[in-house]
Image 1 (cartoon, rainbow, N blue to C red):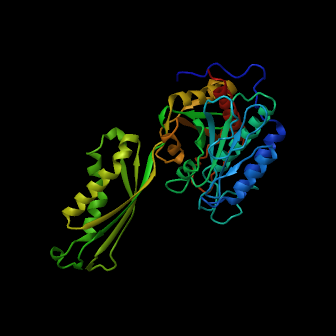
Image 2 (cartoon, rainbow, N blue to C red):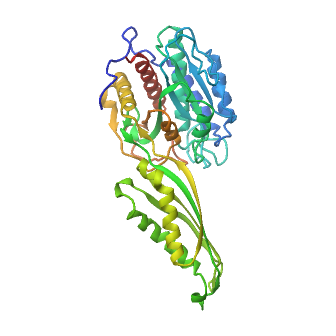
Image 3 (cartoon, one colour):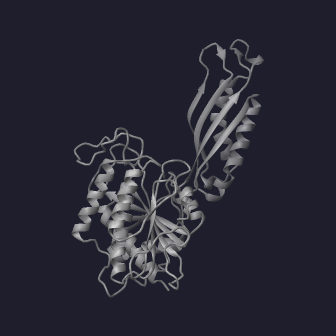
Length: 423
């Protein structure tokens, strides 16, 4: 990494933004409350209200997003926090006109049961759980906002910072497009975020320049044709065979039409056809996902997938109807913003606290922000050192070492200070 931000933190305060013991305890309690009351995408009313109340208590002026859940809040320069009115970004006339750094958190949970045992903060809502760490993400951005607001009151915050608490990350194509439409990026020049990683020890972060997640789209295909008796398949459109050929040959065909390094993969999760052993059906359905490692290939994927399905289905005289649902593009980390995160972490915990991370095949709607402004996402370690369990995201037994909250707050706070002091 180029270390564009190695100038370091302000020298007039030793590690400004370090969490006090009372605030750390409060943030842990806040996270546990969120964990006990998970809410699905676009239903995060309790979560939004809790965030709004705490930010207002700190003298900030958050604005609930137009969708009714999620909010944004600007922390201003010395003199106190400013309003986040849409279009103005809460910046005072005649102030530094450089764009703001935005800190983004996602606030929704997953529709799965919480299967953890022996913890007092297990979900109280049936079949709902914060099994992806969004409660950690939310708490770290809240904590950073509270710390930065205090620094602003002390005249130590060099430039405004925006907090974005986004709903519906788990709902394709994510809540980010609606948040962007609502103006959360107006006045923003860079954006950063974190995602919990149970393969990384707490106290460390994983960084990568370039694509750190993959694109993920959804695919629904219906095949139709005249059915008939299995004794006379030559007089029918043999839809079961046609569906099987689409399921097996389309992925293989795409593998020969796209650069292998793009990692374009169609994987089916559902195939349904027929109800009787001696009747060729008139209708078949397939559902699956399209994942892609490369942003340029993702942009071409719908046309390529449509053409491949039509070609294979046509060979078997099946009529195909394709519903290609755009999900999210890959998160492509900007080199300079990745350097900002590296310098912030180095300033707090040393370069040993940073590790390289591989590109994930999962999707993340943080990528939509990067279609508009440069940004970067870090993987936040949440594994207790020495823990040998193989925990993973989107599982009911997922949990995080709560020391990750302190690490995330320090990372966001240091990044905001470095970004504000850059030349």
